[in-house]
Image 1 (cartoon, rainbow, N blue to C red):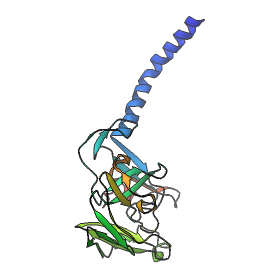
Image 2 (image 1 turned 90 degrees about the vertical axis):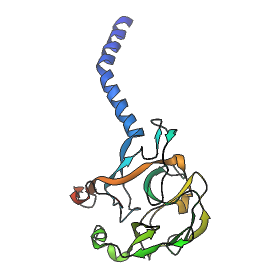
Image 3 (image 1 turned 90 degrees about the horizontal axis):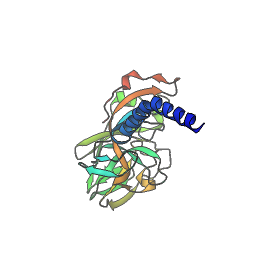
Image 4 (image 1 turned 180 degrees about the vertical axis):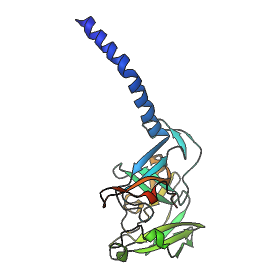
Length: 231
């Protein structure tokens, strides 16, 4: 009887082994090399919308042991203005935010006006084609601009009628930590609430949307957002 059971197990393993190997290779690849990430909230609007699925480059900064946050080797660091995927220091939730402060930066915000190393950001009107990505019924409640810091510019959105932490600092970012915020400044849980982000919590960098669907329109594809480069 034992012999029969052993033979059945061996037979099953011979059949299943190729699939197990494929699954391990694919999951290891997604864990350490590249992945994509759903965006269920609007904390990065107007840059990233609910229903976007972004490409995550996990080799942007380092090589990790698959299924862990252990770094085998590092070759770069997140830079100010980049969009990163990270694990929240508060509860481990996977988030998408923009790097606002890097180690050594002195950052401050006064009524949603950002200052980096004593230099104020300046704000210019945001292009209509980006604003029009937001539902027209929502647009009147928000303010839109392009924030420019040290020559790097990206869209931001504010909601004047919503209570939000619009001022903080000044503060200096410690070594090995980063300050992140959502582009939707008044509707984002970010470093203003959960604090600095340790380097090993940053999973990778994103620069493109892979695919996009509209959750308010029966998940219809938003073809114009497929493979869209993010500012």
